[in-house]
Image (tube, rainbow, N blue to C red; front, side, top):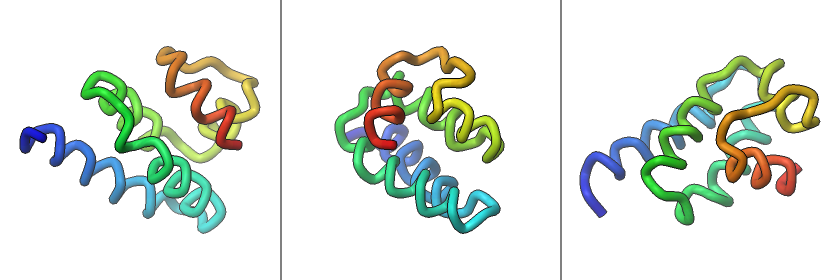
Length: 81
């Protein structure tokens, strides 16, 4: 694995664990850990966008109340929930 991809993975994992609310820390970090090893670099970039969204928007995405551009990440999130 190249270092850029590994750096992005590390960044995503870190951000997923420190979101602001404990409930979203647990939810998002569990989701990230369950999918991160299966994603391409492009999907990882979209996952990075997701983990940097505010908690309310992630909650709305997981409930399918608002859309997220990457349909693969969206499906994984909804299935995980």
